Every structure is written in C-alpha cells, then in structure tokens.
Image (cartoon, helix red, strand yellow):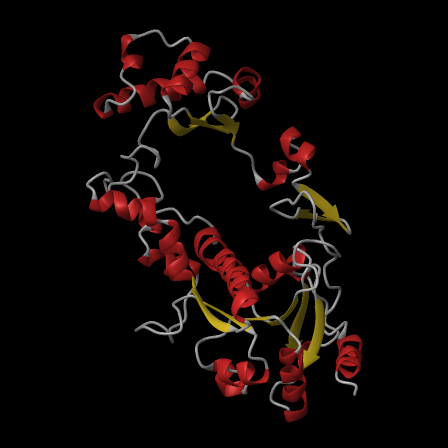
Length: 365
C-alpha cells in the first residue's frame, strides 16, 4: 500500500475505540500497523472496520516467550499505540522505560480518557464522561432541556484518536532531527478541551452565554439553525456572513423590515419562528432544489443510511464499499502519495506466522 506514511512501522496493542481508530488512520496513510491481539482471541472473526489495512499477531503477554516477541517487535517499530489504564503496560513489562531501552527512537503513544496523571487517572470512563468536564457536552442541546449526546465523536475520536495521530506525526518529525523517541500522553479530556478552546476564550471575554440555544452557533440564531420540513425531514442553514444572509432573504423572499436586523438578538426568536413556519411549508427535496449549491450555506440533514447516495459524497467517493461493507474513504487526500482503504482483518492472529518469520529475517546475522 502506498501513502505518505509508507515504510512506517507501528505496533498497536489491541484495545477498543480511540486507539484502534488512530491505528487505522495511520494504516490508511500507508503505515504497516501490526495489531497485537490476545492469544485467546486467535482465529476469532474480526468485525471492526478499525482493523482495515492492519496485520494481526496473537500473543499471550503473560507468557515470557510471547512478551519477548512483543519487545522484539517494539525494537523494529517506529511507533507504538496503547490504550490501557495508566500502569497496565508497566505491569505487563511493556512500559515506556523498557520499550525505549530496547528502541531509543520509539514514539510511544498512550491513549487514555483522563490522562496518565491527575485525580481521575485511574477511574473508568467513557466519551460522555470525558466531555462532561470540557464544557462541550453542556453546550450542546435544546434550550431548557438536558444536554444532547453528540455520539462519541468529540472525546473518543476528535479529542482522542486525531490528537494522538497528530502527536505521533509531530514526534516523528522531531525525531528526524534529534534521532530520539519520546512518550505521548494523549488524554481525551485534553483533546476535547482543546477542541472547545475557542468557546472557553469567548466565556472569558464575556462573549458566550451558558444558556443553550442563546448564542450564534448553538441554535440561538435564526440564520444558523436546523429546521423541520413538511415531510418530517430537516435542513440546515448557516447564513452567518451578511452576503450569505442577504442571499437567504432573496431566495426566501423575506422583505419585512424584521429581516434587516440580523444581528439583533432580541429579534432572533421572532425570526426563528417565522423561518420554522416557512420551512414547514415544503418538503426537504423542494428546499434542496431551491437552495442547495447556492451561497446561502445550506445542506439537507441526512441520516447515516442516506449519506452514500448524496451526489456530492458520490462524486468525491467519500464513502466506499469494501467487501460488501460501507466504509469511509481515506481522509485527507494527497496529490503525490495517494492513500487507499485497506481490507479489514478477517480474523485476529491472521498474520502471526508471517510476522514471526519477518522478525527472524530482520534479526538474522
């Protein structure tokens, strides 16, 4: 497989969610990612799309011989990904000190929810808990109701996987000058807080109201909102800039003086109510015919089942089918070193013999 990370060797210790997704991103970019799975899981079917493009070796890390095999893999790897609670890898004999002693140039990536230190470091948690501390969860949802759960996109994948992948690439760049490896402490609570940083700044500047749906981009503004259509579907409008709002007015034939008060928050409730009534008068398809592709900043709100059939998604091949399974394509795209979607693992431990043979070849005198 090609890609900008072709030739990079990554060892990933099997886990769930953010760690495997990070490994998949690196594999998408061409890295040779070897997933160390539990020997008890050997030959079990693998159903996760996060396994795509990877190879799998099954090891019993409590067995001294298999532990040594893992350390031999570490010696020949550029980067390592692990997503256990702090201290687990150390107890296994695979902590940063031991691994960096074997391979001083290793980039050791650690993925946790709370981080390697702090009062909550040893506590269990999930995305919903990590983003609860960031302000992001409290800011999403209807006015006067409970916060809405934004799937597990902000903590696990946005604040976790993507930050670890960026950290690994940054550390690899630094290593190209220093020749030295290092440890990356990627905590989802840190990454998610970073994602929400602009809103924390707005709070400190007095430009953010903690009441949901009362700010410009949280559902408070009529020109940046979601509206129901006559067929029970939804559309999104993002006409923030004056020229885009002007086009919205023209397209919808909004001539009342009320619409000259775009930034007057006192007028927002009335404007929103009128737009809700207007958009309920036609189907989603009707509004797409009128507004999609214009500078109104418009898009239909699609379900996951509809995504693959949208003309823009089709044209860019943003979604592809691999072995009868719908998957996202590689992102971002590169002009000179294009990446490609790899095949998912059919079972764990599939490449055990192949990987062991490669180790023998590398270590042959």
